[in-house]
Amino acid sequence: MRTWADRINNLREINTLRNQIFVGFTLTMILVLIFAGAFIYGEVSVLLKQSAEKHIQQTAIQANGRLDVLLEQIDSLTTQVVTDSYVQKLLLKEAKGMPSNFNERQSLLQIANNYMAYSAGISSLELYTLDNRRLFPLDDASIKRISMNALTQADERKGRIAWVGIDPRVPDTVLAIRRINLLDNSYLPGGYLVVHVYREYFNMYESEAEKEKNPFRSRELMLLSDSEGNPIISDIDDEAAKAVLAQTGSTVTLEQESMLAVRQHSKLADWKLVLLMPVEAATEGISVLRTAIYVSIGIAALAFLLLTLPLSTMITRPIQQLMRSMRRARFGGLRVIPDGPNYFQTLEINELNNTYNQMVTHMNELIQVVYEKEITQSRTELKALQAQINPHFLFNTLEAFYWSLEEKEESELAQTILAMSGLFRYVIGSAADNDERVTIRDELEHAQRYLQIMKMRLIDRLHWSIEADEQLLQVPIPKLIIQPLVENAILHGVESRISPGSVTIRVFSVKPGFATIAVIDDGVGMDGEALAKLMQSIEGVPSKEPRKGAGVAMSNVQRRLKLYYPNTGERGSGLQIDSKAGAGTTVSFDITIPPEGDGLS
Image (cartoon, rainbow, N blue to C red):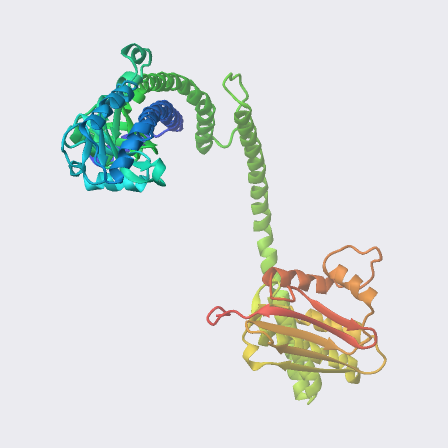
């Protein structure tokens, strides 16, 4: 039974660069094709849907225009009826309290037939007085057979036709009512004209031949409803029509089928016209596109698989040759890859081989140099051990001088010899590592020993002092960083003046986290030009007028300060020199104070 370790090892064996390139390129291309296909599919679907919606919108606008024409025909016809001279005369007589006789009412039949002949959509006309009596047709029906809501609508329209909706007594007709204003009686209300219009009159479909010419029109469904939401003309049953009217948005659901819906509103009758089309019918061409995309992705993926295999081989074959050469190097040394004909090698692979050959050549040279250095080093180790005897001999000699002078009670000279011994020990001890860190206390003690020796040489011409904050004495500092500045102050400051001079070393802190060390002398000082040249020399800028003592020691201090303290606040890193001719020179620098526990151990 295979274990997980065996399976992992098998996976590692096939996890080659060639297979990674092959699989990576193939997956990338398949993802690109899928993304492109999905994008195209989505865009085309949207375009087809928008095209269908635009077509339905145009159809709905045309249907709504035809509806307005039909409504205007009824409105025009009823206007002629209510303004007819005989009708006006008869209602004016009724308004004055003189009831019409049978013959006068019988004459209304001829008038109604004449006007109804102009429109096949009118089922009947009814004429009422304001006192609930019907003048036409000839019966005693009261106006109360019309709902109060219809009368209210007619009164609100003030003489314009009011479309009430489906007549509850005659469901096949649509009821409209119009108040009659008496022209000869200051346009006061005189009665009402009730119109019954066949519902089929509002059928706005085209002929069957025209529908067959348009592939979309045969799938469209039309729905016309009144202001109350009751269907007037509908291709679906009333319950389904009411469910559609209750929905909003460009897409509605009809019997679990998604439909595109376009709505139009008739201002003349306050009716709503809705055109419906199945979404699948609007986007039926998308299935062909989907199949074409699938086939294209499959063909492209297969072609890319066939092309990726030689491509990955072309890339990895030179790399495998380079790997074999590197393996042989473990057994037979580093060898240069010989140049040979390879039709698959590219510029990058050739450059890789050339770089490897150069590296091998250089490494062979370095191995030879290291071998020779090891031989030389082994020869010089004995001399180095012998050379260590000389400093010990010097220290022992100085110690002998010190005790000899102490016996002769030459204490001042003995202290000088002791200072020289400490000075030599401090300096020679740093020869192995010039960047060794010490404390500020050690540096100040070394500077003090140097000042004691210089005091012996200059006697009364030199006065010196050291002022240091006790809290800063344990701060670490690079070795031999203060003494060169003291030496420079004595050499170019005190010794350059005739009268006695002084050198002061100050260690203080002005800003938290930083300490300032300053070496101050009251020597001859420098003018601006000399100070600028000195700063150039310290920064390593070659001078056109080289001179002796041009700041070599200070240049070394400057480089070490910038190495150890690259950024020490607002003044920057390195030496800061303030000097005026005849007023002395101050050389200072800032160091960072490490947190507790980060100092010297």
